[in-house]
Length: 425
Image (tube, rainbow, N blue to C red; front, side, top):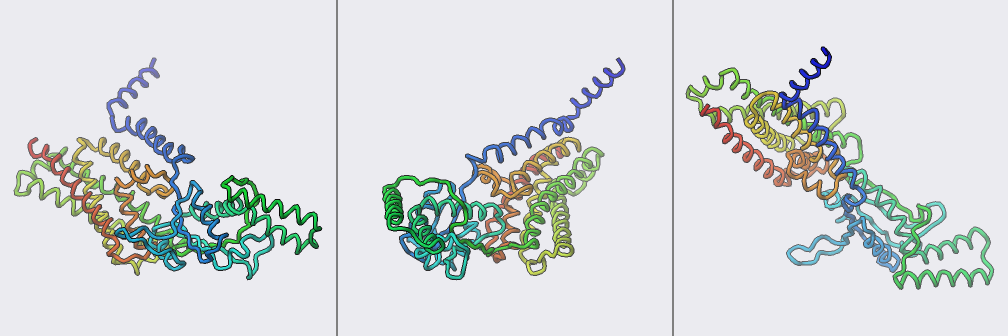
């Protein structure tokens, strides 16, 4: 009986503590749903990979390979930039494709070299005479280059079965001593059949071994563990900034509960002035936290910090402003510290999971990536990535700065309106 009484008392306490109740049941279900949406629907929901293709060979074989890439359902192939003001742009070159990858327009570019059509497939070891396709990679996306490299081998077999057979016969002649006249006639008939079948649009078999096309990869952006540190510093830093700002803004609730807020408002200080002061303090605290985190990354993990100071300051200030406003909004909505703790934990972890703080957004479906744009995390991480990863100038930060400013102003305006309840209490 004593045990059942203790259990009933604990259940009643849990029911009254809405914060603990939310953390116990709502948070796990919410996170399960988010991860189920992100990873459970990968087969049908994963976004297509944007790939730039540069054809330096302009042979029938390279054109067939490009067409095969275009028909691959998981890829979006672009051979030229998007038309500007209705004017068609020239085809990508190796230089312009590399620049586009550095700007983040695509995670990978394929460069088909001169001479590829003369010797597209080789079953022997690679040598200096063998034309090699180059993959230009953005190392911030660790998945796309691997997927494209594998699909390239598959597409080479499915789009050029006759070429593969013809090249195979040449290697057989070279290493096995040649074919008899009857064998060669039979082989030529088979090659002719494959060529006619391809031209008629019939599908080739998907089976075969990898590595028949020589491919080399080159990271044009990032590629070292020091570069990755900047991404993680921004991603994790923004998430903890949100927790810091919500906790610091909770001082409003402490002051309201203790009666300090009433005494402050009875003086010459208005609610607007008080909240602006809280906003400045919370933003300063958030910015200082970012400075400490990036300095730690520089001191311990060799992060290239000092050469990116101007961009860091710009992104740090506007990110701190947005998270400070977010914290004030949560504190204004909640009535107790317990409510603030539960609500902030729930909202911040959800924002961080879909905004890119827990894992890169390119893992997610297009729908989830768009949903992430409604979070502070996504815009802040994109801005820091431009500075530390892509080495872009400060002028390129205007989309992130504009959105973070709009978020900060909008959230502060709502927080100020909600805070009127303290003025009339």
